[in-house]
Figure 1 (cartoon, rainbow, N blue to C red):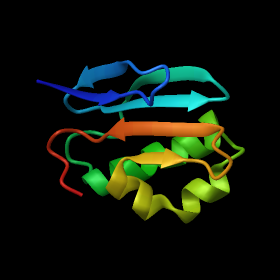
Figure 2: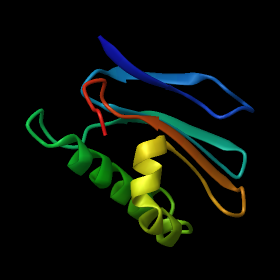
Figure 3: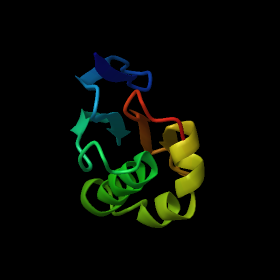
Length: 101
């Protein structure tokens, strides 16, 4: 079994990960970055995994949008996507298949 997400278009494409990982695809200033994120073991609650993932994005991937990401965290987790207010950063992700947030 696997977990996958699609990349925003353009350029499109997708990322496929192991079923326990968060699949993500980011477009920032026309550059694509995708991958698989492991945020804890199988016993870690899914909401905690999602919050750890977004904290990692906000602190390690893009500090420019960290305030927006933290402010909208619940909405981003629910929709599994985020687009910055200036349109320069867009992210799609897919929580592990057993997640039902």
